[in-house]
Length: 180
Image 1 (tube, rainbow, N blue to C red):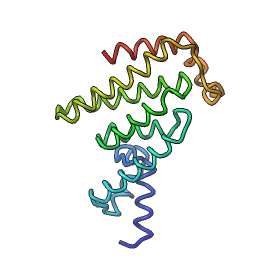
Image 2: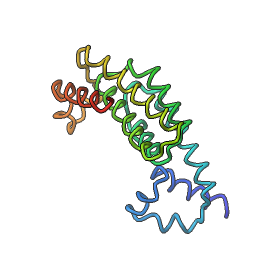
Image 3: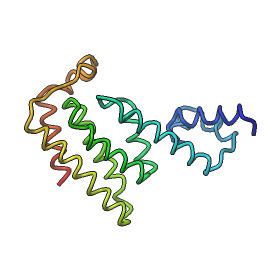
């Protein structure tokens, strides 16, 4: 296959975060399949994609689209090394973010832990426990502090009803229950 076709295939693959489901839903899976990309190549691309997202997340001061994309891809790939890296970033940078970002981080981490539950390998059990502990630490720190919502979120109209102080406090309490 020539270089241009590989680049086109990679562009489609990354556009959908490696999800064949999303490619199909958007009508691009048939086009993508014509490139006959191997599973090994897809694994390389998804690892590259995850590492790129990790770098973005590490350098951002809010929970952005990059974080949400990373959570989505980690739920599917269950890449333990990448999950450990994300937990490390959250431990290092999480408390420096606004309250709503920290709530979103804790929810993302808990969703990764939930996605690992079906596989009871020792390593997954350790990651599940570490994820819950990391989320719980974030949430317990938040419950003691005033609610602060970053200007980025305050300026998004569809979030106006979601980012009220009461709703954020309720989400914090609900997520603390999920950690236990």
